[in-house]
Image: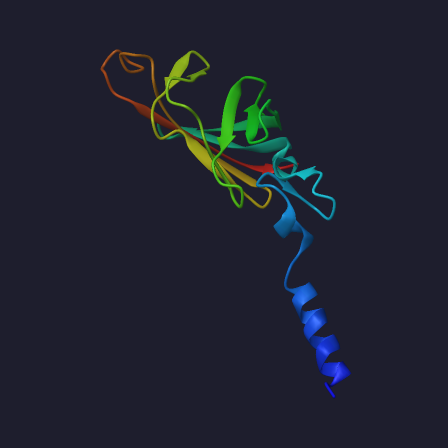
Length: 143
């Protein structure tokens, strides 16, 4: 006769090792798989912009985009989440940002309530007409 306690323990362990999230598609979570993973990043962030050695106070509001892995910064700049299990995102090269153009390497990440964004930009000739590119960073916390 098999030990019923051993069988019960094995059944409980097998249920505990598999969460409902494991059955959700890539961009959803929760017991009913209806919560979009990106919702944790939505909201207003307050922080600092660093540009050419100067720092400025700044705010950034993140809203949901059209696609399940898209976020929109300040109603204009599209962030594309690149990994379903992290807050890493990219911004497509050629994206206009306040009159400048994002070059390759634009993007950032959400880590808990912190948003870090790096923009490598130019205006076609460099901001000063010298052909150089410039890096702007924003680091902020969710309010």
